[in-house]
Length: 232
Image (cartoon, rainbow, N blue to C red; front, side, top):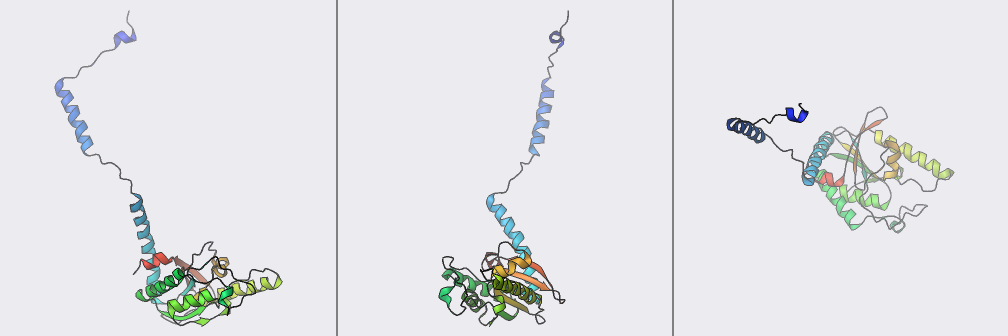
């Protein structure tokens, strides 16, 4: 009587066959290349390279002129508060630039000049942090209360003021600069966020718009300060 176990046979390969199988196995292993996972440093460098390529395209457009740059004031002291009603002439009642913010503004100016970005008019909010940013980046500027910080008090007058500032900011972003030049608006993030739906606008950010000549504009892109500094 036969069972499954009794029917099993042990196959013994001759030595030559074993040698052949071993050679085939080794040749296959020789062609195998392990997958390399990039390190954190390599991943960061690849991301930076992508950012730099995109931002160089934006700078190339700015070098041709025809754009509106919205530059948010540089770094400020958040322990200070703006006191309403706003007094534009009293810096002690406002949030002001830190020393780091002043140095950041100087460096942004150096970057704009090194990258040959042609500028025509520079308009600044009347708040001290914006005037100081405009002076340190560009030297000369004009004041526009239409770029002032939106009011905190949303009573009837506050809402009217907010609507007016939003309307004027959109109009300023839609204004076509002189040929071969760019216009700069130095202002505050709250004035820009409702218009282009930017939820977070870091201090010192360069935001680029393209007026279409028909009363509207297109958001081209944003360049963070540390990204700008890598381009020159």
